[in-house]
Image (tube, rainbow, N blue to C red; front, top):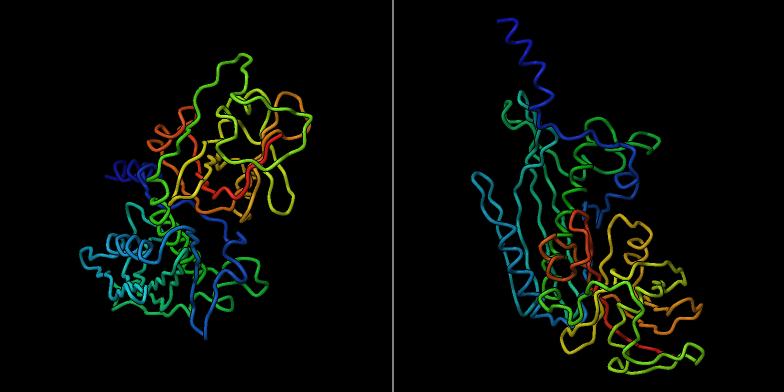
Length: 351
């Protein structure tokens, strides 16, 4: 019997489902990560969706909320209020947060919160608030806490504010992760309206040979504003034989690959451009996440001056699955994680 028990204990690390130990000093969870409004813990997020009407956004968010907040066994999540004229949706949530789980133990808390969605023309405001916890409910009724008394800076951080506190800290960390997942899910649902419009010019494999642009470019001429229809039809080939750069509104510039360019499309009667960025490219991802406007510049051969410049206003971003990538960009490595950035084309220039 002892031998069997010893073998079982040796196997526990293999069959354990415990979460990986997380860094309690990660700045993401430290000072300022938990915000309050009128003394109540509240997380907010604004999602911009230029070109979408209040009605479009309301309907999309209502569909998402009905799918996200619904009863599940003993947990009763639901959409508690919706008013299309006001553009307001409210959901009441009851879920479990799992701190750790193994063959012998389960550490979790029940979390309650409200999600308020306020839709307007071109944008959507989210607020996660009224957060409460019911911890260790199976033991003598458990313990109940509010976010205001349990996950604020004073309670959930050490005195130096350099790391999470031992007990309250795990509630703070997992609540912030839940908030991030929730807001990303809402943004993805809204972004799907943009992705339903397939890019008109998805990149194709580029032969390794000299190709002539569909329109002759005079590299020595001055940049002049032109219509989108006047640009070369083979920008992918130009980028593959030359180079392509991405410039933020603050002037920061980085070089990207030809297959990051995913062509043009139409979105609500507006011209848009598509960029597909590998999330492991930290500099490119940071530039796109922090910029509301940007430029995509194409250089032919070894020219130091851009031959084509496309100025854009960021409209939406969307994380892409492998299946979506196969239909949009055959050159993409489906083992990697990508984000599709959709930008409204505000100006096009060519030499």
